[in-house]
Amino acid sequence: MAFSAFRFGPIAIPLEQVFLISKQSYALVNLKPVRPGHVLVATRRPVARFNDLTQSEVLDLFTQAQRVSKVVERVTAAESLTLCIQDGDKAGQSVPHVHLHVIPRFEGDFATNDDIYDALAHQPRVDNHERTPRSPDDMASEALRLREEIGSQWNEIL
Ligand code: AMP
Image (cartoon, rainbow, N blue to C red; front, top):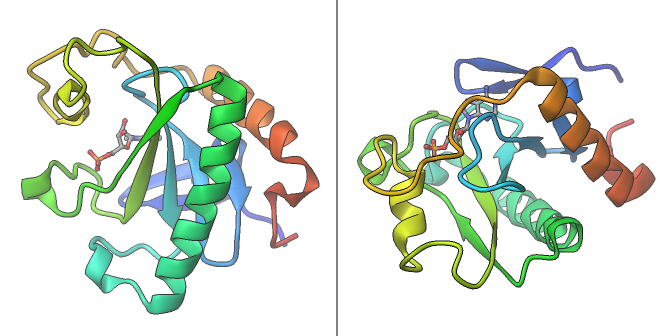
């Protein structure tokens, strides 16, 4: 089965920026990561809120999030991870499509540990120095690296 693009809210994500595909979810690299290695796991079905998901979609989203967590830890040598869903605009959601953030964490990476939530916010109060949009080439090469790390299992649909 061939894919030209994945939906991410109103955005079309090219296959080159996707590094994991399951029956109900996919993982993509980030246009504006808060830190290198910050990636996203989204549902294939374009719905905005966590409560919109079926039980089977919840199971698949979190199963893929766990796979992605392992890969991100290996590739970045992260000591910990922040996993989070901003569920609704009042919670900071800027793309109205259910997605889970996977962010590598290191000792001292933010002045205060929870500053990461300010960095994630649409208009951060702290440290957004790396949040400039990346080039498609840069994003594609990160996705390729992550696919290679996952191996042939990166695409469960093919
Ligand atoms: P949230 O604010 O929780 O809805 O998260 C949206 C995430 O999507 C942020 O991490 C953005 O950097 C990321 N993002 C926005 N547009 C794109 C895009 N075209 N490709 C990949 N990631 C994106």
